[in-house]
Image (cartoon, rainbow, N blue to C red; front, side):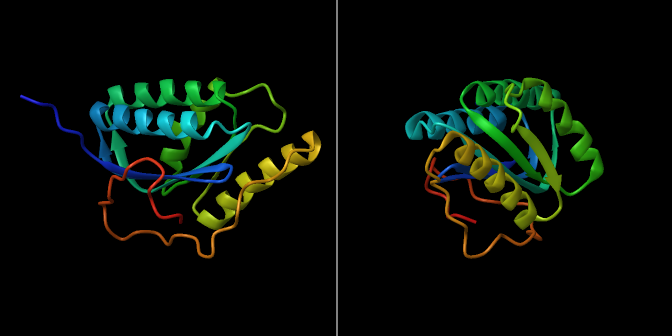
Length: 169
């Protein structure tokens, strides 16, 4: 019997920002798939530095095995030039659970995590972190501001999509 994933996600890479949404209740299968697709996007784009914005407003919960995969994933991301992580969340409990990921971060003084219920605020915070880093390092900026930020979804399902093929929020 084949194990089925629970929960869903979208991923897209926009210049220097990896944009993700997480929806529903996740198990280890979905977490592994999410990690593999994220790893594929970062490996194929090979950004010098980058940030990640994750919209978790419709994320519900995860199994202990899924949380272990998140820990492994964020350790890998930090080792592969992730400069900042912004999370759009729906509850303070979720914020508390995710804050522990900071132990896996870079030593860069610009690195950080930002939590808010406002997608535009999180996106702008990540973009400003990258801008500041690029200004200090005299590197060009590759991020473009989206025309519109996603509104909070009222449903609990989203489409899984091929790496890099999701519409930009």
